[in-house]
Length: 288
Image (cartoon, rainbow, N blue to C red; front, top):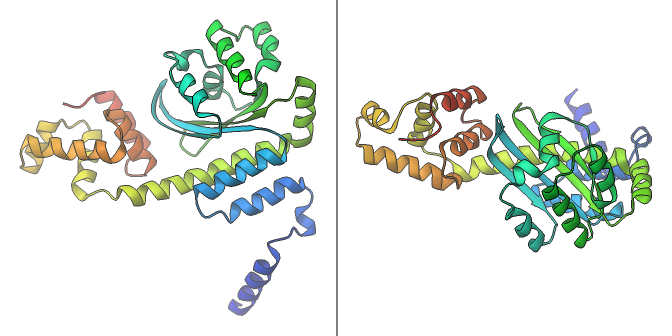
C-alpha cells in the first residue's frame, strides 16, 4: 500500500506542471493560477502571482487588504497594493476615510462583489451611495488610471475578520462588463483562494518572528482577563516597573500601542481566542 502511494505521489509530481482533462472544466487561466498558488513558498511569491494575473487579464491595479474588526473598531490592519505611492499617501491623509469609504461599509455587511470607479459614478449617485468626499476619491483614482474596477469582499474562519480584493484599470464601462463576463469567475476564485493561502503564510511568519517569552504570554492571558498592571505585578511577585516593561516589549514586538491592537494581534497568532478579546474589551479599553 505504501509503495502504491509513493508511486502515485511520484506520478503526480511529474504531472503537476500541466493540467489533466478533469481540470479543464474551469477557465485555463484560473486553473493555472491555482496550480501555481498551491506551490507558492511565501507571500512575495503569492503577490507576484497576483500581479501576473492582473496583467494577464488586462488590468493595471490590484489591492488586497484585511482588518480584524471589534464591533465597528478596526483593531488590526494589513494591506498590499501596486498603486502609486503618492496615491496611497493621499488616501491615507483623508481624516475620515473609514466613514466615507463605501467599500468598507459594504464589506462589513455583505459578501457581494461590486463595481468601483468613475465609470460607475452615476450608479453610486442614483442609489444614494455617493458622498462628496467619496466622489473626490473616485475622481482622484481616475487621475492614476483607475477608471473601473471590481471589489470582492473576503472572510476568514475568524468571524470578525473582514477583507477585500480590488482589481481594476482604464476600461470604460462596456468593456469592463465584457471583462467581467470573461474573467469574473477567475478573479473571484483567485481572490478567495489567495486570501486563504496568504493568511496562513502571514500567521506562520508572524509566529516565527515574534516568538514571545513565557512572561509575555502570561501577561497577554492575564491582561485579557481583566488584570491591571498592579494586579499582575502582585500576582507575579515583581515590581510594577517590571510588568510595565513586559507590556512595552509586547507593544514594540507587535508594532502597536493600544491594548486592543495587541490583543487583536495575539488572536491572529492563536495566542488568544476571540472570546478573550471580547472579555478584554468588555472589561477595559486601555491599560493602567
